[in-house]
Image (cartoon, rainbow, N blue to C red; front, side, top):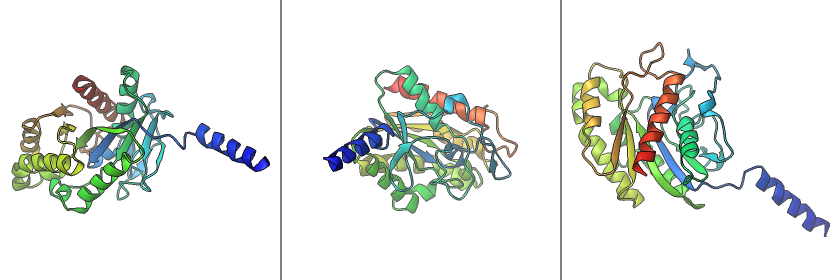
Length: 255
């Protein structure tokens, strides 16, 4: 009898901690450093400032590097984008906003997959990044829930060489088609971000490619004009928040 009582109390404690939660609505965060989040990062150190829009919530979870669900908090990509210092990204502001504005959204599951400094060709089908993206996405639904959207912010690395910038549109369209095929989700909503900055001089070529993607159920949110950190590449914390709200608006308009 004592053993049964102990097991029952342990189960209650586990449930109360939220550790047994699984998400209802799952969102994939992919791309490079501005999706992973560099808000508040200076000299490879994060200032630790978390805006209220990015506050944790027991109903917002993230899939960690060990493929387990846990309560989400900044920095979302801390154990995924391990080659850089992660700070605030758009994911938490996005999740809080869609929960606040839609009664149809249940427990949100965020699946961080972004890695800083990655060009579009490093995400092509068969690469390590692509395989990790597919595997983490498939793992995210094993406990239930449905994949609602891929949020994609990438392209700064493709602004350095003109040939890469000019090839961006075709590479991006193929990535979207391949991902939908491999996930068996032919109409999966894909919301991409048009660049606010770049590492080279061919930013407008990549931006135009992003704005002209011609596939069904692909939306584009423009980050141009959002303030940047002193490196002129990464969005500030306030800009990451604004981007998260823009992405939320795009999702809610598409739902």
